Picture 1 (tube, rainbow, N blue to C red):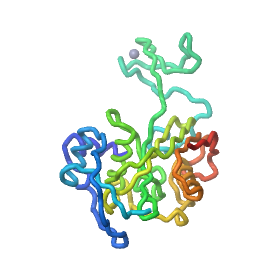
Picture 2 (cartoon, helix red, strand yellow):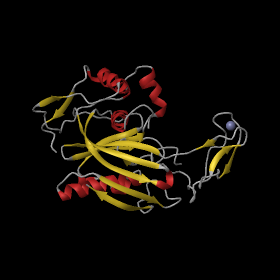
Picture 3 (cartoon, rainbow, N blue to C red):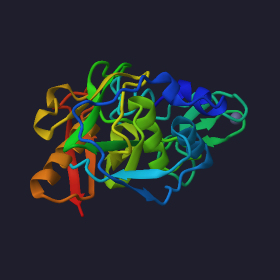
Picture 4 (cartoon, protein in one colour):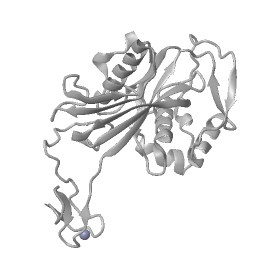
Length: 284
Ligand SMILES: [Zn+2]
């Protein structure tokens, strides 16, 4: 989600932790032991980033941690999206000519088609990735420092970048938004939001070290016990649904993988708790 900073982070070789004021949590249990795990299959870019922020890369697992405009931001609808999707590309990405909305021969959907060179521009959903970070039987939330949903709480999540896996993207977003270095434990949920063309993949993760602090896009980061999650102040429908699934799993006593479709009401704000319905909820 930190698009503007990415060139700084990766192009100029600056660690995002330079932007984050790390703090140690005084109320966290001491790490009594750790095991060195096989390094995660990270890209050289993320590997280098982790190495710069914490010395030689090794994956540590703590043993005592316990336990909608749709293009503006993750789940960030700021304008009422159309009930029927219409192409939004106005100019050809090849020749710069104006596009027109037509249904090409052999197709069924409206497309933006260049009136000069005839190129058909396909628009596809965007992938949003993030982490549900657990520590000491609590979950890490970030209070947003940007619109949409400024001042509301979210899981660290954002748009997947070209060249990274979903897991790498989720770890990067967690580092950028919460300055937290994490171990991914397992995939947790996939949530599709057809109306705004987004698909979320959320991973369960643990803090690698008991440190986090707000990155530039966050006002505050904090651990919440399940009963204390501020459901009245959650930034996005996708995060509300994810956290409710998480609590469902806690009550069920098992960690599961979930899938669902979030059907948003056209015009509903990203954080409207009554602005969506959940369909096709399945879990493994
Ligand atoms: Zn063209």
